[in-house]
Image (tube, rainbow, N blue to C red; front, side, top):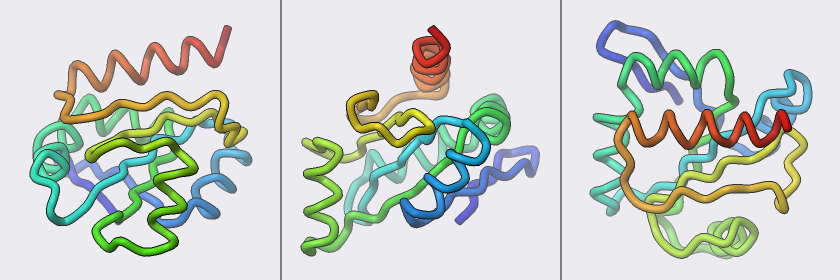
Length: 130
């Protein structure tokens, strides 16, 4: 899955936790998990505004492993994902350390614009470096 910025730059998004965490472990990059659903209007807004901002695309491409998990269907698997990460609502962005340690996660709930997202990403990476 990819997201393209206005200038054509693309962010590759993994669609399974196994793939994303394997790449994170190999590269040492933290993971941004985009939890979304087809019925979620704020999720769609993130896709067409925040995630196509050229600065967001650059930061995500260079510094993060991105994972997009579809929670549209209510299944045992999606329930397990929601429980594992402590989701309360959508959209939720989960920032995870490269190790995948759930204790180090940070949740961003609701719509955030590109500036807000970039602040969260920078703060999380700084916290990981400390």
